[in-house]
Amino acid sequence: MKNIILSAALVLMSLAGIGQDNYTIKMNMKIEGLPAEYAAYGEQETVTYIKGEKNKLEVTSMMGSHTTSFDGKMYTVLIDQMGNKMGYTATKEEMDASNNKSEAKPKIEYTSEKKTIAGFECTKAIVTSVDKDKKEDQVTVWVTDKIKSDAKKRGRGVVNLGDLKGYPLEMQMKKMEQGAEMKITIAATEISTEPVPDATFVLSTEGYQMSSYKEAMEKAKAMGGGR
Image 1 (cartoon, rainbow, N blue to C red):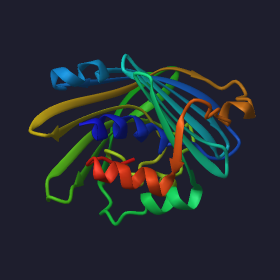
Image 2 (cartoon, rainbow, N blue to C red; image 1 turned 45 degrees about the horizontal axis):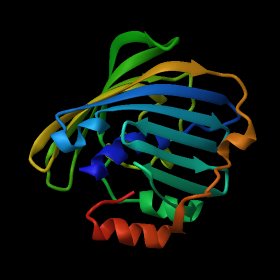
Image 3 (tube, rainbow, N blue to C red; image 1 turned 180 degrees about the vertical axis):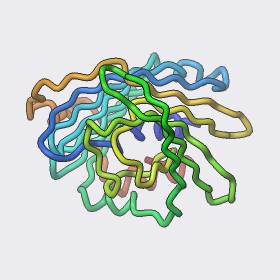
């Protein structure tokens, strides 16, 4: 259950922009249908910082925070769950290898529907993919071509957006987890194009129990989760 909660947030990290543009994108994420013990994760705030190839995602909820930053060379991931602080670092090659999964590209249908989200005109698209159990998954996406996003560098996370053109500013999807159907909605509320300082992508690991990427993945696998 925690895996799908974190993966939903990390979808945003995998959409990081390219080029020399600067963006600070604030979003709300709502997960409906969670069991009572995970209800506090149902409302989350996210902030994504983009500066060229550098990017950082901050996710906060009532239960704590999850921060992932890429400074152009290394990834640093910090997790604080009600005071239990842990984290890991990974090279770009390690993260790219984990994202390079053999999945069929989804079908993307662009519609003629338009709407403005946080000041950016978006087009509605329907992304349909088939999972490993041959079950069809469908995601409704509102995407803008005004913010650059490199489909080749996207991670998979909880949703495969394939070669979707542009940056999604709103997504709605349904997922089954442990017999429960959950509805996940992610929507941008504010976007700034002010320059992002390089210091934004440098994280302090003080107070966190850090490990290597390999150790973190082995632990996650043992617990039945993943990045």
